[in-house]
Image (cartoon, rainbow, N blue to C red; front, side, top):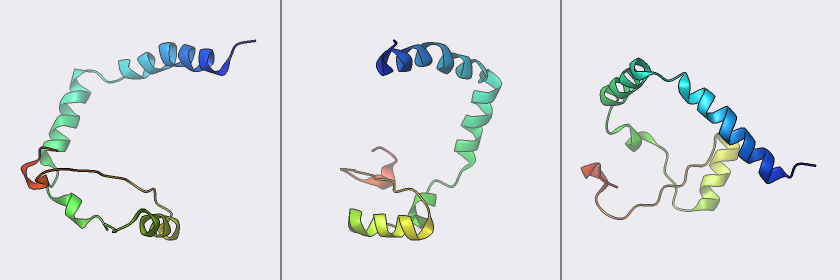
Length: 80
């Protein structure tokens, strides 16, 4: 019987590279342009909370995931 770890390793070796092949250079260039065209300060509209418990409550209420962001420095420089 194959262990769970071996199964994940086999899936990683065979499944992930197949998915990556779908992303050719044209796809990458389109994605880079989308990111460049995006509003650089859109993150400021994110409803931030002061605690993880508050975030979890909002997450359940809005049926959205919690995104944890930790940072040290000046976020406006774009270098985290």
